[in-house]
Length: 114
Image (cartoon, rainbow, N blue to C red; front, top):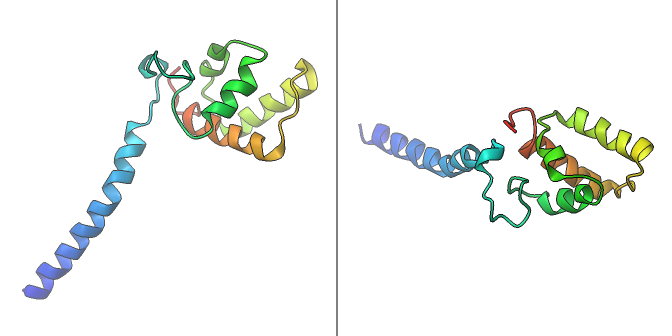
């Protein structure tokens, strides 16, 4: 019985280590209405890469154009190509483009409720 309790304790400890990761994913903002209006990069939701997206997009159009999205990474990638080829957007450096695509597909991706 002692081994079983020890095994359960180890399993519970392992589960507790994972829970904060799950909670933070659940806390991610998925609706425009929930973005804090005092957030520095409003109306974009907080997340890694927000600054690159903010400055890369605001130079040409409203950020609401971005938050109206909710696209897959592939669609965001096509939109960046279109903006560079047809709208005069400066081509982002490859590493910046990847940061932007990571942010857009994660925080304003297909689960986004703009």
